[in-house]
Image (cartoon, rainbow, N blue to C red; front, top):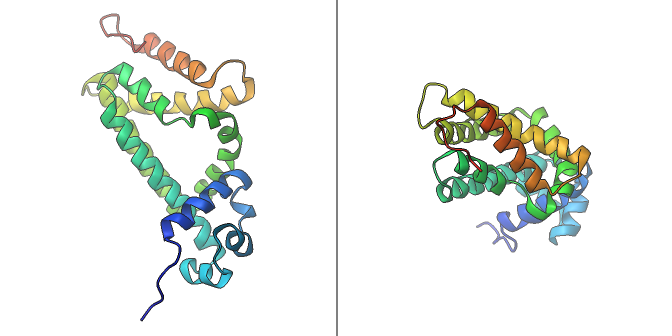
Length: 193
């Protein structure tokens, strides 16, 4: 009979995700994880198999959380261009934007290196693109292209805001998204502002 886990996998992954977000995946070791979650390093080895397996589990957990946040935002925002803008703003880290822009790049680097994480990110991007495209075009043939454009602009705007930091991040990103939509939309379409 197996031993009862004193700390759930979700609690372990939540605690480790907070740390990985600050120090990056390269800084996570079994000894550091052990000190953070209060479990013996050997217990963590049994759960994850290897340091790489632990990092992958933490980052897959981050994708799970982002999937849930995306689903909630999609169900709580209007299905129109303004709803597309609001959906993306809800996916931003709020008061942690400044920190998450820099440390988030460390996580993204790991996501791009690992084929399992890269596939997970690609799947999320395709789902989000479909949701955005539908809100922007109400089902027209160019919905996918418009969704990808908006997604790319959103991510690019976050990165460039990280360099400028001259405005409130939400205000800057909203302005970029609304300006883009106004420049590509027909005069008969409603503005997302």
